[in-house]
Amino acid sequence: EPEVTQTPSHQVTQMGQEVILRCVPISNHLYFYWYRQILGQKVEFLVSFYNNEISEKSEIFDDQFSVERPDGSNFTLKIRSTKLEDSAMYFCASSGQDMNTEAFFGQGTRLTVV
Amino acid sequence: AQKVTQAQTEISVVEKEDVTLDCVYETRDTTYYLFWYKQPPSGELVFLIRRNSFDEQNEISGRYSWNFQKSTSSFNFTITASQVVDSAVYFCALSEANRDDKIIFGKGTRLHILP
Image 1 (cartoon, rainbow over the protein chains, first blue to last red):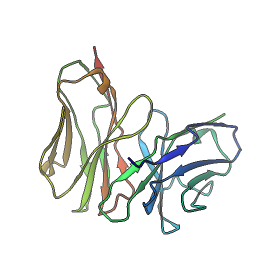
Image 2: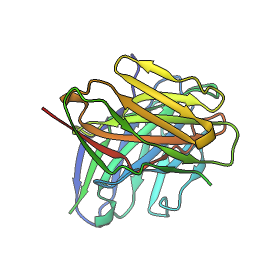
Image 3: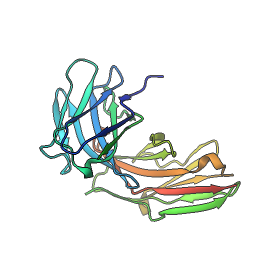
């Protein structure tokens, strides 16, 4: 069964460093998303991406964040200068070609900023 | 605006008991989707169900069942004959319109099944 794959599963980085989280969405999907879950809290929407541009972003998704689809398969989330409060689980998701299709989530990347 | 409320922060039941997780939602749209996800201790989000706003039929899948009541804006989830492996955090979620854009999650209910 096709699945969304995220790498790495766990990343530790020093405060102020740049970090790139990687995702390989399901191959024929057209809509891509990043969500964040701070430990013990709810899952929060960060950004959606369609047709090579951001379609919607939340207030969390400030100038420190950027997304990119550098090739036909990867979808990345970059945090330019990490802060302690960026420590969270980051989930990538993708959904299909048609409307009315569900979003599939990756297994998540746990980011720890020290 | 969209909002999902899971009033139960934490529930503990003894194995084999039935348990119902409550979910109440708010939306102005007439077309929307409701979801339940399970998050086991390993951290991944496991999709359980998606229900569109025009389908109020209750659904049963094995020991799981869902009760969608549009009149009360509720989408409750019942686990029958609970098992220890059901221990997890369960999230109810909502998205508006016909695309799964911007899924709004509730705060989750942590379910402990005691042996």
